[in-house]
Length: 246
Image (cartoon, rainbow, N blue to C red):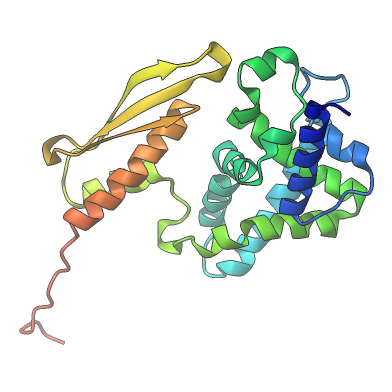
């Protein structure tokens, strides 16, 4: 076994440890982490099943955690939790990229850190676990990955993303909406990095962030800008009129 094989085996062990699940059928694990550029036996069919497992499990968790929210509010929350950006972040936390099997072209272009490939692999892993064990086991893995994320949700935000919350906060203060600008791009076509600036105009605040997509970078800048806005321009609570009739 050469050094590359040893590194990959170690990466597979790490992924299973982070997932809290040990595969009995190693081929299912390998298929879940195989991109179509590497082999005809790739993870796209598994991804199809894993997407359903993920959506059901997160929907059920939100249903139980927020009994007073409407269907629309729950749907928006779920969309933010199961989208590509969130899945890619989870995959990076688990170091899924180190265990991926990619073709030479994808490997050279940085496919091991591309959000779309990482997100697809996460969904494929959920399906692979369900086939290796059963649905309940796959559901439990998803629950373990999402429990803390759901606990941190502010239900008053109704699952809105950072850009939406920043816009609403500015409107509440009767301030101009932010402007987002792409100020730089690096990397090859299928492995680009976008450098985006968020400008709050008259407030004199600007922040930059880098992401694998324009949307990812914009969301990062909006999150920072929102925290700065709430700290420096808190919404003043209207004092009650003591002379008003009760």
